[in-house]
Length: 78
Image 1 (tube, rainbow, N blue to C red):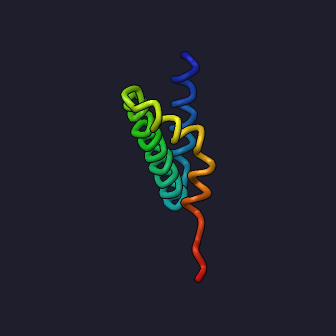
Image 2 (cartoon, helix red, strand yellow):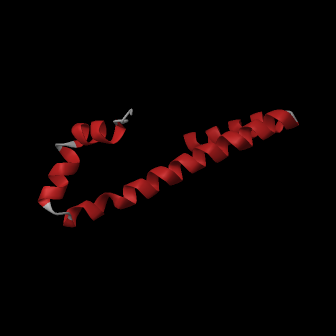
């Protein structure tokens, strides 16, 4: 039995003895993990779109990032 199959078998055995409450927790945890992976994949899909970006805009996004964030976070108190 290879390592992956052993892990799957061990996981199945552990799941079989869990209470209903713990099964719900496991399902919720798996859903959260799946959503994080989907989010990461969606973010990575955008990576290629930067190739056609104008050099000035790219520089503004990267080199001036911290200054731009400071400007965005300023709150004018009157």
